[in-house]
Image (cartoon, rainbow over all chains, first blue to last red; front, side, top):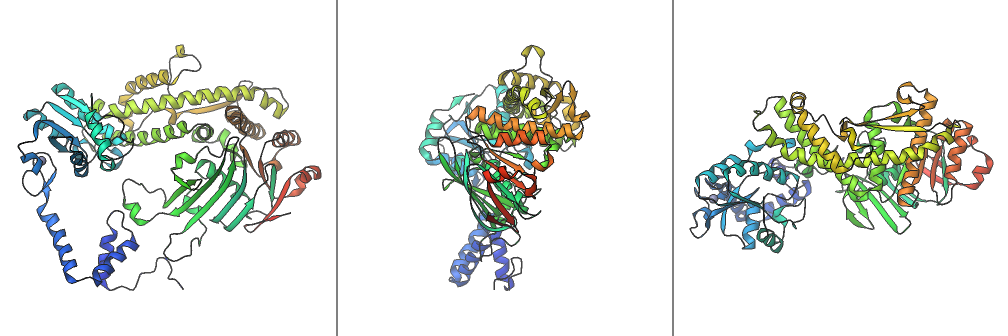
Amino acid sequence: MALPPNAPLPLVEPVARLIEAFNQLPSIGPKTASRLTFFLLRADAEVAQQLAAALTDLKEQVRLCKRCFNITVDELCPICTNPSRDQSMICVVEEPLDLLAIERTGAYRGLYHVLHGHIAPLDGIYREQLKIDDLIQRVRTEPITEVILATNPNTEGEATAYLILKDLVPMGVRTTRLARGLPTGGDLEWADSDTLGSALEGRREL
Amino acid sequence: MHVSSLTLRDFRNYARLELDLSPGISLFYGPNAAGKTTLLEALFLLATTRSPRASSDRELLRWDAGGEAGALPFARIASDVHRLSQSLRLEMLIQLRQEEQANDVQLRPQGNVQKLIRINRKPVRAFDLVGQLRVVLFTPADLELVHGAPAQRRRYLDLTLSQLDPHYVRTLAYYNRLLQQRNSLLRAWRERRRPRRAVDDELGYWDAELCKAGGYILAERLQAVAELNSILATLHGDLTGTAEPLVIGYVPRLAYPAELGDLPDAEQLRAALHAALLHCRTDELQRGQTLLGPHRDDLTFAVAGVNLGLYGSRGQQRSVALALKLAEARLMTQRSGDAPVLLLDDLLSELDMHRRRHVLHTIQQPQQQTLLTATDLSDFEPEFLHSITRLRVETAQVFAV
Ligand SMILES: [Zn+2]
């Protein structure tokens, strides 16, 4: 006889707590959470210790780059401190994962700016929650000649690009958008390198 | 078009059902609450992805659905659909939403149920299902269409157009999403949660996209109303035996320039909508919502110049509702060359002899599949009963007679 669906499982507290913690992560449901917990319970103590240390370091050591808001352990990220990167171009992305996707194409040698999200009033995300003002400030003070708006090709990404463009137009800086051809509604993060590379290559002036 | 089968599992009061359906008329009869309407509802769901009656999709699942350990409870509807050019197997799984997905901002929980859809065993998005099977549902609640809230009348047009045109479904969904974003933006200003700075810049993108989608929706609706009116010019008179045409009036909240004529195109309407939106900026900021666009429009129904929504008797309103549904079916046939499946829920018992004869004539056309429900067979002529398939429904079981 199966337990009624909402009955509390008879688990000791540390086990229940870890299941609960895993369950809060995206794409992990109660079943996967239990499986991970029992795996760690059986595994060598080392495995759990390494995981615990990695998690602590993640929150203690990783921070946002002061200049471009990419993730970094130092004050500036490796891209910002790399002198061979083209200092006159900024590619604007929504998330650090989008930056990685563009890096994977090998087709871009300039700098980045990570917004950390997109405009979505419905979720309470407006321009002030994003790093838009910081971007405008950079364009004003750094020797930037081109800004590539590489926000996602969906409604929210387009709305974000539109708002940034409005600010950039009076500043006279060349502003471009990735070429069409990326799957509409999709995430840059998931686009394959070839498609993303040619979208970057064929970027159009706004 | 017609459906040759209907399979249900844990759907409302049905545990399991495997039903073969004839391409002609099938009459489901039995006591109240036996599950007759549920059969029509299942087909309506497959046609539109939405239930005509559930206030929450959670109610679609049978109370003890999905007993197997580990699996989330689900209900399943499947049907084989035969269209002029092709046959399709449509399936819908209605599943309790996993907690992990409810946490995800991308998938906003609607109730706590998700619908998974397959066409010919291939998973597709909900949009792609709409219009594969076309149905017109007639129910006693159709009266609401005439005297109920404007939303009911917009829904009438939207359901018709959505089943006919995949682009309409997508644009309407896109429009509604834009509308929610735009309203959230306006509300934040109204409630002074944000400074009113660069308002035009912040609204710019939403305005432009909303008007593009809105102009298209408006143009499509005006076109559909024109076609429905030419159908109703004779249909309503035939139905009531009065020779008086029923005239649908489309009442846009947007007062577009008269020089655009009766049927402006999408681009003209986009431009008019954009100009009007800019004009009511102050109002919108004060009210915190989008005041113009197809989501605020309404229909009127008039016979001999009299608005029957306001001044019609109950009988007149019932005729209007019936005429609108019959016209919807004819519009679908005209546009696609393929008659929709008619679902008549406990309808004939409410009609007088003349109207009933008209409806029976319609459903007895060749190539017309109709599913009827009734509580009592004594409402029907023996001759009619012999010419159709009768099925008895009792406590969520269907028996061939
Ligand atoms: Zn950096």
